[in-house]
Length: 447
Image (cartoon, rainbow, N blue to C red; front, top):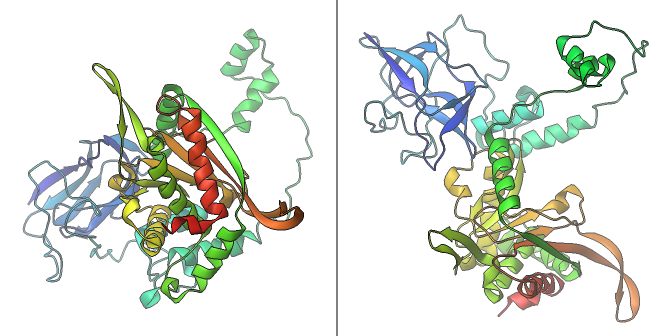
């Protein structure tokens, strides 16, 4: 028998660190090759880490919630004669050189590994044992405070789906905050001033304020997606001169088209929303104004502008992990139905935490749908490596003048931020005008 130490593997895509989110094993557990030992969160993805060894778990070297660098020892295994054999149906172990780590689920060619570990009898049984749900769904439930044992499953073979969790969370929210907490009877109190307060007093800050600050604020570590997002946004905001334009649009015919597509047998198994028409409009408008799909590139000799003759369409998605922007590769090649399916896959994968780093790289232009939050318009920040981003506002009925008469119409606002180094106001304005024109008359897409 021998002890093997497993280090955090190089997850690729330029990522150098990850957070241990959840350990799926404990000391003394028997594991086989490819059993999932933990969930790790990088700046771009939540992935499962499979075991490179068969044997018994020795020691967990990193606690949950800690962010560590690639190459840091995370777990030990006791291997040897007592190693359990993997079941006959198990996929072959991924080939790896000594010390190279293992293939991450979703990154290797072997597909998604599942745990075959059996918990020892003395370990406490979790309340969700017996609930069929994938790890991203369990993570979503934890983030939303949903007890999976209380969720009615609708998936195949009784599996809890993302929609099941979201529906349960929405229903539960109705019963939250029924009573407003009362203020305490004591309005003020005097407490001994800590060292920080004495220092504050020397700076003109009252002891009462300095002492209260410690209980009035909460520190949230900046890591994972939030760390990556903040770094990217700062880089973009302070390196690319942003300019934003917007236009109010009568989107009534877009809403009529969406209604017809929903009723069409061709789209019976596909979710259709106004975002689909916006996506098609952006792709159409890019072809007419390609500079919004370009990128500014600094070179040793100065700079150059790379004009992409393809569209990797990014969709900003708000997820429990934070803002992710996966993109649809070569979206310009897709028809309406294929694009609708791609949008559904992209958003579902992102919200379930299954977007890979490859899904989020190589974008050429982005759409952010702030309308889902009830916002009319915004001034979004451009994704690094791109020159434009389109913000779609909420679609609501408003009075609108049509042929000299005021009528109720479905109205929205389309806004766009652009890198002024790459394009000028005329091109940016033409682009947004084109997007608006398609939303007003979707028949323009038929050409």
